[in-house]
Image (cartoon, rainbow, N blue to C red; front, side):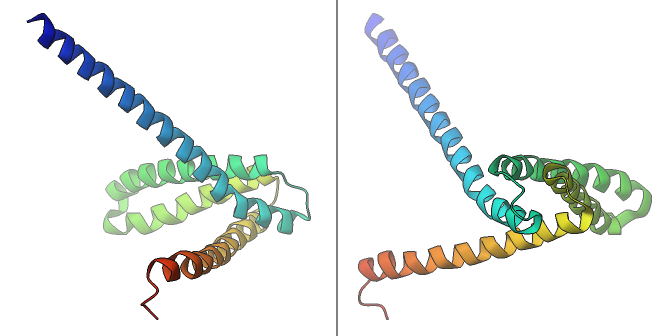
Length: 150
């Protein structure tokens, strides 16, 4: 009986250890992803603001932008859905995007047009960086792993 209790206790401790390790890996991965996503926003802010922005500004914008977007979208969808019906989601997307631009405006201390410029330029930079990394990954890894294809 005592051996089975010890075996169960050991299994529980192992499960907790694995869960904590997985949680630590998840948190580290999310932080690394946050930094990576902040880089295009940082470069866009540097270009639009003429060098007057920091990586911290970009990280604040990329942290709070999606949170504000989600909150505004959900609340406005619920509230407008009751008032105007099916088209509420379109208005909710527009309001949430304006709220996200408001986060950029506040983080980078710019006007609305400059915040829109940072958002659009960040998307363009992200696409270019993604295409470059994808091309390099394709050339180096894909061709090495699958030399018989193309």
